[in-house]
Amino acid sequence: MLDTRIILSGIWITVILIYLMGDVLRIYSGDAARMSEGEKPNNNAKWLAAAVIMLVPISMVFFSLVLPQDINRWANIIVAVVFFLFVLIDMRSYPSAYDKFLLAVSLVFNVVTIAYAWNWV
Image (cartoon, rainbow, N blue to C red; front, side):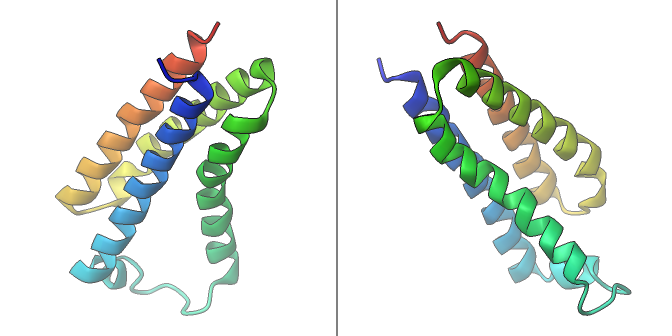
């Protein structure tokens, strides 16, 4: 059986790749342009917020490997719950079926993260 640290790190890699795949599909489908119509063309605060949000699961890949077990366990649970709620609340803003599907899959991986971290002994 793999070490829980490696499993959690792998789950976070999976989650960030799901988010990135959604971004790529959104660009190629033209949905990104349609979703940003009417917004300011250079909204730096929005892009900074997006960078911070995307950096969290990327950072969790590293933190899952190096944090002490007790802190690691709770960090994974808290971050997975926050992302679960964030995605659940924001899911309606994505009009495409592929986005909703990918976000639903990411929710499943958040639950898997919580389960692994919760049961980590």
